[in-house]
Amino acid sequence: MDDFIAARSQMALSLGFHIIFSCVGMVMPFLMAFAHWKYLKTGNEVYKGLTKAWSKGVAILFATGAVSGTMLSFELGLLWPGFMKHSGPIFGMPFSLEGTAFFIEAIAIGFFLYGWDKFNKWFHWFCGFLVGISGLASGILVVAANAWMNSPSGFDYINGNYVNIDPVKAMFNDAWFPQALHMTVAAFCATGFAVAGVHAYLILKKKNVEFHTKAFRIAASFALIGAFGAPLSGDIAAKSVAERQPIKLAAMEAHFETEKGASFVIGGIPDEDKEEIKYAIKIPKVLSFLVSSDFNSEVKGLKDFPRDEWPPVSVVHYAFQIMIFFGVIMIIIGSIYVYSTFFKKEWLDKNWLLKTFVWATPFGYIALEAGWTVTEVGRQPWIIYGIMRTIDAVTPMPGIQYSFYFFTAIFVSLSLILIFLLKRQIKMVPKLYDPTDVEYQSKSKKS
Image (spheres, rainbow, N blue to C red):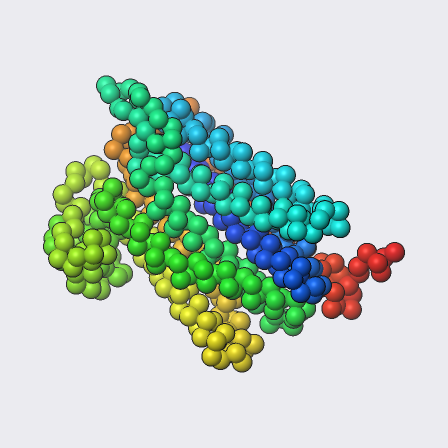
């Protein structure tokens, strides 16, 4: 493994790992706060237990995300010094603000975990809600920094120098809103389906059914926000990409020829050497409509761009297809759930519906990882789009592959520890969190 590939592989692994915790941190506190609100409104102790159980999960995942996020910040300087040398002063603002949001989140989690029966009940609830708000802000700010790499602004590039720097303009670049919106919606979808799937599995196991049923329905409701919002946010993001990075759009669709009334491609195997795509299903004029709301508009093909600026077409196309496939599956599942809720309530307790959500547990995160592959790989060969190539930013330090092995070992260890801790939390539900269980041990029983 050469140093350039090792550096890119390490960054890909780190981002792929950390993005899961970022999404959990953006969404899970809102599930927790909603369960807490239900407890305050109804007085149902099951919701209180659910809130406490979820809050412990939020704390565990927050701590793990803090470790992986800190590692990422070190990796930026370690692996990409050429990039950080120039970009730090330009897009440092969103990272600085993200640090502030992180500290607010940490303080709010502490208040929430240890504030039971000590604070005013609504202030205590607000602390939990603030965890979600700060987590959401943290995710959006990091996405703003990434969006700058796709749509660099807030500076003038003159004779190889970055001058007239405007950090505010850099943070609120043309790509930040479409990326942040789509990321937020995807986070709700992925986390909602993952949490719903876990609780659906436990319902099928006949363990603490009332407890897990309430948890499942809250999580499934949040998943619907993401599932139904994804096509809308995705459309906004795709139109933005078509305007700013037409070569990325062409790679997403494996669209080689510039044409009017371009077809939307489903499936297919790209052949970069022959500059064609085989075995694809093509829907006439739909791509043109999606790009510009005009069925006859022109869409640029890859052949219109220098070959050395093409991203890895096959990787980008397959990742885009995976994202679309799982997104559609989750919309179908969400539609069935909505239909069940309003017209066929008896379906809500059917094993087949619960099994569907169990199978769908990883779908959101598969789509999310695929979407980030499109975003990052589709920008190649640029680390700052149109200005700095990735190969020019990599560290000159030899033997970087050993760093890759080291960081991989850390991430594997973190994953194993996380699985152990979350499994332990689930096993504690009967004794610590579900007041309807015969094994439940409240403080009053202990005393």
